[in-house]
Amino acid sequence: MKEPRTIRAAPLTSAAFAPFGDVIEADNAREIRLINKGTTTRFHDVASVDVTAGGGSALISIFRGKPFRLPFEVRMMERHPFGSQAFFPMSERPYLVVVAPDESGRPGAPLAFLVTEKLGVNYARNVWHHPLIALEDVSDFLVVDRGGPGANLQEAFYPEPWWAEA
Image 1: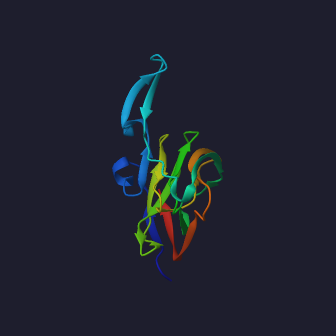
Image 2: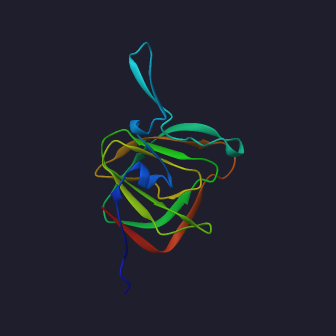
Image 3: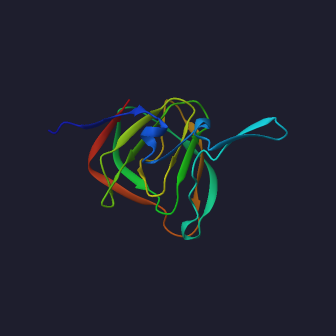
């Protein structure tokens, strides 16, 4: 019997996640300004929303994820060829982010990031990622992604599973 293929989750940082998209946090603001007569600080442009390809438009949704237990079996990855997809947690529960580089139109070896702070992620267009992986309890996420014409979902399955752990 083969040894399981394991990926160990690293902490989510902007630098480590940069090849796959943006970490959504105030520290990534391209500009900081006071608005509303000085009562509000705007952390401007913290992620690059890319949804207009093929006549698309931005959608704002709430995804409610059921929790998974670690180690977690990674068999399938997905990507969105016409737009980015941003997830921002509405609670401070941890979640797991699994991404993979593209290898000739298929996902390569995955990488995992354990998110324990109230940080979001914005998967860049065409980045292979696993669907939402909530941990500990049912968790809601604010999601910004693409609506409009065209099939904006591609799925690929690994011939053998990977196991993600914290």
